[in-house]
Length: 234
Image 1: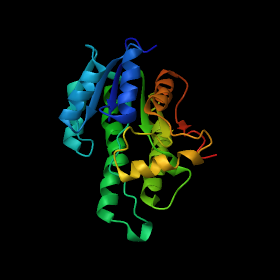
Image 2 (image 1 turned 180 degrees about the horizontal axis):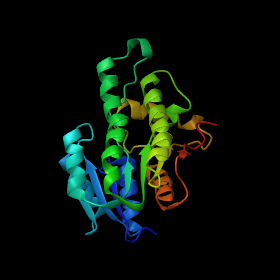
Image 3 (image 1 turned 90 degrees about the horizontal axis):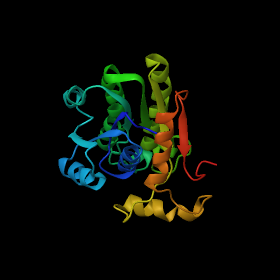
Image 4 (image 1 turned 120 degrees about the vertical axis):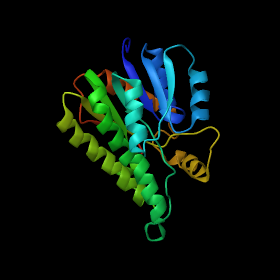
């Protein structure tokens, strides 16, 4: 399905990004995974295997790192951005503005920066897919910053889709995704929410990845936000 396409997955060393990279590679694409940590990239590349997967270190919060990355990679077809910062979970009045600013610089400005510098390297028929999250649509206590940054990403998707057409720009809005084992107190909190969801379970990364592949392969989809949340926002 994706034979002869070159796909960059930023945030491709773990979680949803790694799942997207795996499915894209299995569908015949040449894949470049990128993230800040060389060790995690090496481990991810070893998991994916094959000669059609490359790993590149990239810090999306740094302008020079971003521009140098795209010069190294050269022309490509599709950019998937699945970067996840350390998410602040304090209630609004107790929020740490330094932590909030750092999260925005990664989740929102990182995606903004990547899209801006990717555009001149994308081949005809190519696409950019952002990642937001369901807190853009249904917020929870302690999620003021997360809700705001996810909503901002979705607004960015629609505005950029208009400005850089015919390059297609879309966004996936994932729901609550299971991690095995839970890697933080937040992950444990998310797992406890599963019985309250209509499907009575959390999603898994490989299920969310299907939405990205759909948007990459759909030639008439742009400015679209695809929600994959197990009914969390019903």
